[in-house]
Amino acid sequence: MTRWILAMMAAAGLAAAANKTVDFYFVDVEGGQATLIVTPEKESILVDAGWAGFDKRDAKRILAAAKKAGVKKIDYMVMTHYHTDHVGGVQQLAELIPVGTFVDHGDNRESDKPAERLTASYLEAVKSGKHLVVKPGDKLPLKKVSVEIVTADGNTTTREGKPNPLCANARKKADDLGENARSVGFLLTYGKFKFVDLGDLTWNKELELACPTNKVGEVDLYLTTHHGLDQSNAPELVHALNPRVAIMNNGAKKGGTAPAWKTIKASPRLQDMWQVHFALAGGKETNVQDMFIANTDETGTEYYLKVSADANGGMEVYNSRNKFKKTY
Image: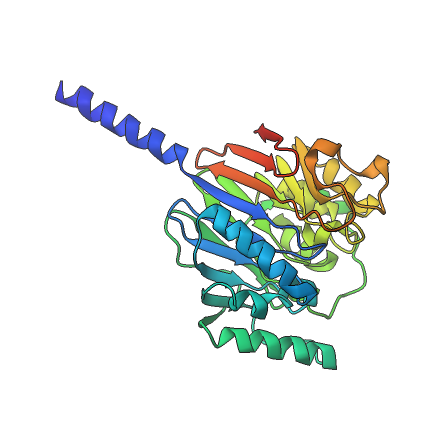
C-alpha cells in the first residue's frame, strides 16, 4: 500500500511539472527584436528591447507583455548586439521597469557617431543594474531552465556535435565585420524542449555553428535569425536545427525575404512558421497563412505571438490578433 501511494505521489509530481511552462512573448517592435521569456519559476529574460523613440512605443509594448505575464522586474536583459532595432529601446525600458542584470558581449565593435550614441544610451541604462559580459559556454544562473550562450562577440561555442552532411555544398558569403556577426546567441533547454535565438548572426558565423558538425543540435522552436533576412538563415544551419516550429520576428518592411522564407519553410521537420508581420516584400507566395500572422496591417496594430512550452517538449502557439492557437 505504501509503495502504491508513493508511486501515485511521484506520478502526480511529474504531471505537475509537465503542466508548468516556459512562456515566450514575441512582442511587435516593428521589425526589431523584443522577446520576453518567463520561466516556470517566474524568472524573466528579455532579449533586446526594440527601437528608441516613437513616444516609448516599444518599451510600452514590452511593459504590456510583462504585465500579461505577471512580471514586475526583468531579471536578465540580454542585449544581442549594438544595433538600434535591438538595443535602442533599452534605456527607455529601464525607466519603466526594473532590470536586474544587463547581459551583453562586451564593447561595441562599431565606432561611428551613431554607434557611439547608441553605446552611451545603453551604458546609461546599465548603471541601474548589474552588468554581465558573456562568452560561448557561459550559462545564466536560472532555476529549472538552462540558457547556454553559443555565440558572442564573433566567437562560437566549442560544443561537440554530430557531423552535418549538409556542409558538403556549403558556400560562404562576404565576411561581416560588424555587430551582427557578434550577436549573442543562446540555446534554451527546459527538459526535452529546446529553443534557439541567434540574434542577427550572419551567414558565415552560422556556418561556423553548423559545419562540419552541428554544435547546437536539433531544436523544437527556432526564432528566425536576423528577422528572416537572407544575409542569414543559411540552410546548412536552419535544416540542421530541424525545428518543429519557427517564429519570424519581422516587420512589414523589414525581414521576411523570399529566399530566407523558402529556406525555413523547407526545413525537414517544420510543421508551421508563424510571423509577427505580413512581409510586404514576400507577397502572398512567401508569407504564411493569415491565421499564423500576428499583424496583417502595415503598422500600429502591435499584436504579439505567445509560445508556451512544457518540459516534455509540447508547445502551444497563440496569436493575440485572432485568438487562434495550435498545439504541437
